[in-house]
Length: 396
Image 1 (cartoon, rainbow, N blue to C red):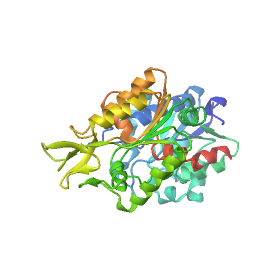
Image 2 (tube, rainbow, N blue to C red):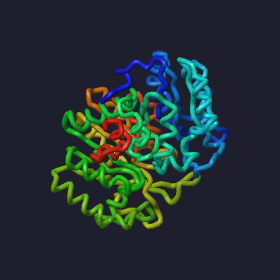
Image 3 (cartoon, rainbow, N blue to C red):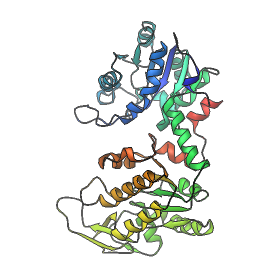
Image 4 (cartoon, rainbow, N blue to C red):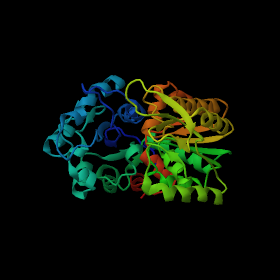
């Protein structure tokens, strides 16, 4: 793995792919700059070496055309403030005006290009578009773990034009190191916690983890699909009816692999999420027909916390319930606290996925885990053992 640390960047135009897909409020103000902060060391390395930092990223999901709310111009003031340095902005990411902006750069300058996804060619992995991007730099650096699983032009194609001058940024290198530590240098017991709304998108990760972990905890909306697979009555709870058979198969596979699959035993329920709602706790297999499960119950919390406390390696992706809503946050909060306590006692913990990270921040626990990943989908695909295009492109 060649990292940016191994090269002198003085006088070089360094094309850096970052993940500045940051949440903005209605006034286009950044509400969480974590991903930006995580890439600062790479940008600072370029500047301190006397190189020129040309930063490219996407923001949101525009339809291949300019949309003000998705313009990277919105994030420039925060980046400038964090770096305590002027940051210039280019109104496009390819074309004559961009070439002119790059040509004007001096050593130590920082330039942010406009949103890559204002061009459909980015998501399409277009080679001509990638070549135009590549022409802007002398060196390519990828520091965007969150999009390395996407075969997009800026992540998978641009590196081809830098056969000997492509590098891992500090953040990307740290992500890979932490994942390898969890998977390849595992201290046991090894526990994975998978939550979130649906099984879809996490099937392969769960299946792959059965080959690695001792315990696998299931929570969140997906737990009710498993509950239905066990013949339970789950009321109006979220369920993927087309995945019930799959859930049965996963339960059986866990037994074959000698993995302890822990499903919630009880559920905190309500008729609705709106307003001041009446709740009840029931066995997860016996939810009243007009109620829906919205969080794990206290018995499940106690059982899961005990498993976590006795684990030496912990991976968490996905909340236990609708933690964003007061009244249904306890399961996620207690799991987060248990992971932090285990970490304080010497366990290695890796947390990824937007909702899990958001939960840690909501409860002011983000500093209590060993590593906070900037990638949700990329983390899951890495756990599955898949070849991530953005990483493979750096290794070729």
